[in-house]
Length: 160
Image: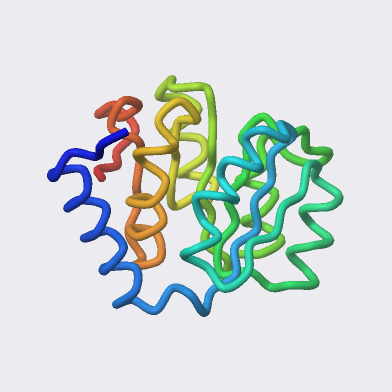
């Protein structure tokens, strides 16, 4: 299968930005109850981060975050939590210094607003993760906020 020149150029430019920011030193923790999603996100991130860790439930996520002190957590909004409304609020209380990107199938403004207000720095729709996750990580690691373009809503109060 041939890759068109614009796609190749974009991919190469993304790679160069990542290399230039020396992201390879960072650790990322991915939490999702769906094994296929975990595997897909891990494959996408393994060349960008020094270490990529995966967990499938809240207890494992909290334990892993305490032990490995990741620079970034990417967590499924639907991950069941025991003590808060959503995973973003729980993680922000326990690890306020760790940057968080939420993955979700929900694109309603209430979910986006709740996550951003709870401390998430990124909100990426699972259906657009292939296109949005790397730009989201780049924005979040540079202290920005990112919301998938197909989920953006003026009431969320965020821009890419």
